[in-house]
Length: 165
Image (cartoon, rainbow, N blue to C red; front, side, top):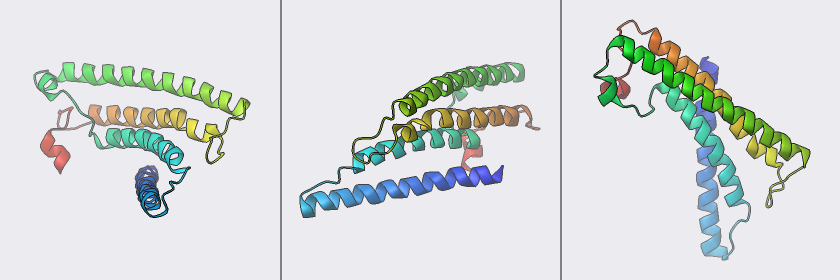
């Protein structure tokens, strides 16, 4: 499990570093050479899509997604458990839709041999972010639900001070 955690964080850090270097290089190229790198926007969009899914999964793992504590603080333990279970089911349903339709999209991209315009990469490489990201988020949502139900202190939601620790 720790290996997946480190891989997740490492990929986010690496891709953000690559994005910074590419953006900085592109800005320098525009001002010094008066020509921008044609591939930069394409690569940035691909990396941003992957980062969005990785970041959402990481936030679930850390329990850092925004919550409605004003609502949950006023609920009893049973109601909180019901709310956790309900939001888990709804999120898993959404991720299942994303995974299925994302896989269909990737299949179509591979079937037609679609390629990105600037780099000529297979579009499926970018498209894979959707089903893979949905699966990773699903795993993290289940993990968060199990964590919340197995808390020994009876509290189902982390407070702001717990998150800051």
